[in-house]
Image 1 (tube, helix red, strand yellow):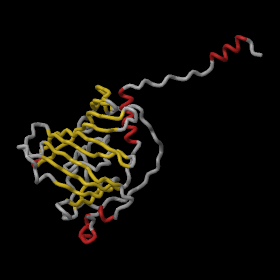
Image 2 (cartoon, one colour):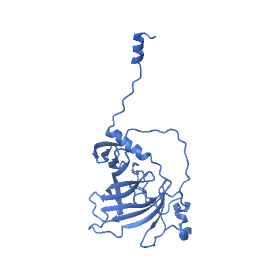
Image 3 (tube, one colour):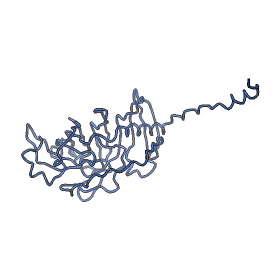
Image 4 (cartoon, one colour):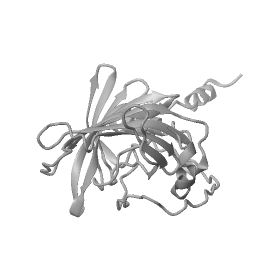
Length: 275
């Protein structure tokens, strides 16, 4: 039988569970990004219909710059085959595209990584790119999970029904860290809507800032962009000051022909091109 003083010492030496860290707005922001990234990478292929609708500087529908495309995209590098959709069954010629945010082209694809920083230098529009390099699988050395979110700080957070609304600002490089507001499910932290900066590239190398309001849905457990509303700032007053993009008929096919992503092969496949 233990002496009383020894028994007391053993009891006092028992480990005490550490309290859970406080669920601060900054930690919630880190959990939001971790939840979004838990769905990545997306499936290897995504197909969708892109509907662009914009207004002239006088507020009328701009029929020249309002159009519809059907797009077959390889998500690893965003290489895509696109065909403009006209009335009835008419389709445009085969076009090579590479949808992207913050680039001189239409945004996308719907599976884009919305937490990805904007590119340092926008790439020129690619009509016929050089062949893609062979993909190389690198060994995984370690996996690191970050609880904090160091690219942004939360300036305000409020509950709006079933959603949390976070207002955030970049801690560095605001040109690349483009997120400004987030709306997430307050139970799952799944992203539902966000406000982000983007750019409008016009002739003579003029670039104007754009504010995108992006709405998200879900397909097969993956977050996808469904709608974008853009407003151009920096005192821009030309056509397209207000523009909307809608992503419809989104699907994840198990495979697509390799020639879809090689524009040099388009001429040989005019008769078996997808509609």
